[in-house]
Length: 368
Image (tube, rainbow, N blue to C red; front, top):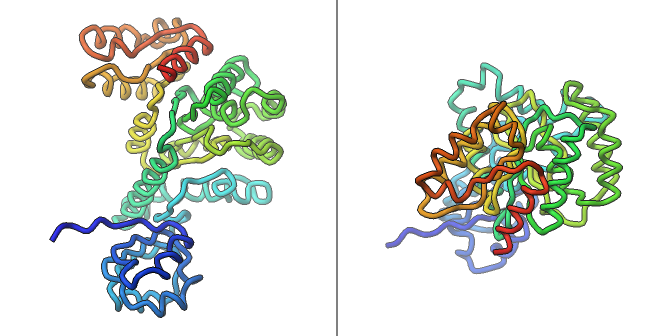
């Protein structure tokens, strides 16, 4: 017999359809992060859970025993983890920053998750390590569903860029330009250039964006996280973007000292940096713009360059902004040119002076 393909069930609406279908409709289902207690009577009446796997969620002891008895495999969440390991959706700012205005950033789920991940008691605990790995795999699954069928442009850059500076405004304009042209803008989800690009993408070229830039400048950097995050929260609460797929942040608790920005339409936050970097760069099918940055940004440049170097044909453009930045201060351009001389990489890389030029390169490629 061939292997049965499991099917994901990530909402109670889908579960309801299966419960009212044929007796074997639930077979091989993956019930992910659902409030099964809300459907307890119907599930207790059901007697065929062959191949069913329950991934987290909420269920009573009676229901868990019943489902196991009739064939289900049940994985419950560790109550000590500050976020669900089996989540089926990406985060949004209200979830990560819950309690910010009442109790401060230190008491938010985002800060709690970072502390838990760095606690020596969990950092080297095999079960905690498994929980983090499962969480990150679920985030990757949700992220691929979120970007499916979309043209995604990456904007990479340093976390140190301060609000209220010309560079911050330029990065914001880049995000707005790309999103207004129909692309989803993805960043590393942190502060600085990443926040600027996410902000611009979320609000677009609008009076709301100009007012946001003014308001955010009152808390210029994240060294005072409470003030920095509360200023952003106020902007998010005031403005409700029309589209929910313009802006994407992909941060990590590995860099927990850098809080995630609040301007992603969705936030794919990882515990581990390695899969986060790989997935972030892989989903940018419309190209990547690299703004000035330091070691983390350089790492991203060469991760993309490696993909493009070994490709069988030229890939999406990799556009570096700032000739002096990338030829003098951090001279990576010469290495890229040398690698690209005899590989598909050479047809994909581009060095420009301004964010407007960078946007033009990506948008020209997106219309071909």
